[in-house]
Image (cartoon, rainbow, N blue to C red; front, side, top):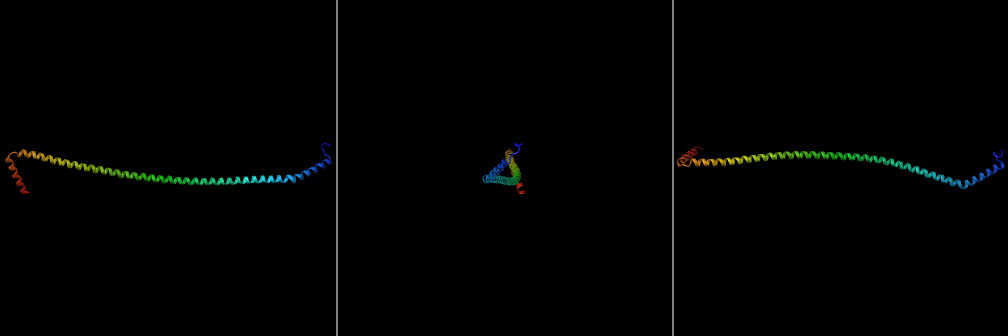
Length: 164
């Protein structure tokens, strides 16, 4: 059983060496290890703070982007509505202008037709008068070719002239 239970002297030296090693390590290695751990903890905490700050900024930017997107959509809808209104107004004006011009063209065509009709009627009257005069002249020449018929016609015309 001696192998399983250590001797008191051995146990004493083991505790003494442990305490000396503990004191040496505490004086020389404990502070740098604790400083390293604190430094690492500080770095991790600053990284976590930076990540939280970045997350908050991203959320804020996303909210700003959503707001800008909503404003852009409203502006787009307003522009489209204004464009539709202008297009409808322009179409209505063009339609009204076309109707007015169409009525004017129809009226001008009617006036031109009436003027042409009046011109044709006047031309036909002129031709009828000319034709009637030519016919009357030919008839009179034929009937007045003898002298007694001419004297008789002249005396009838003189009598009619006094009556009027």
